[in-house]
Length: 189
Image (cartoon, rainbow, N blue to C red; front, side):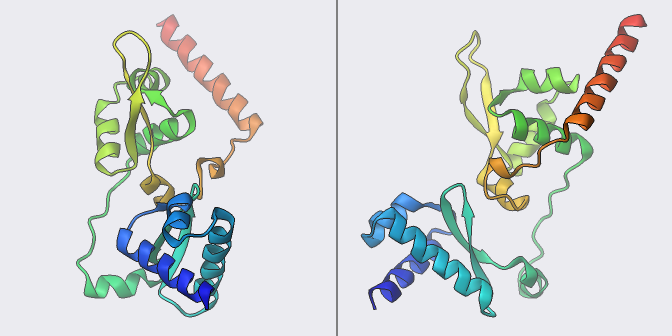
């Protein structure tokens, strides 16, 4: 009976908060240790996945969030206004990938990699809530450091940044050679 109460409490917390909640905060609220709370949540995740339910609990870097199943999107848009869809252009995707893999990173570091100004791209990614300011670098001018958000993880179906795809070393070397050739051509001109 105590487990059923804990499940109901967790469900109420996640429903009410509407965003990812850290495991330690959930455990404190339901007055259980973190390991027991994690087991209860994972049991709930299994129940939601195995039953024909419209909701699921997702894990995002040690935090949990209650959300609707993506397979029911078509049903949801029939009743709700169609949400504004953000378009990620090649420039935005390129900038986002640099931030995701190099974070925390400054705008100057992004521009050094891309070879062009990146103000607009970074600002758009912040507007889309895929990127946020993570603090300031301890260097002259104290430049802003950027990193990805939980929204980034949700949108790309990642549990954590460790889930980012790893680039094949051979392809990485090929890209490096292409970049060096391109840089040499610019110097020759």
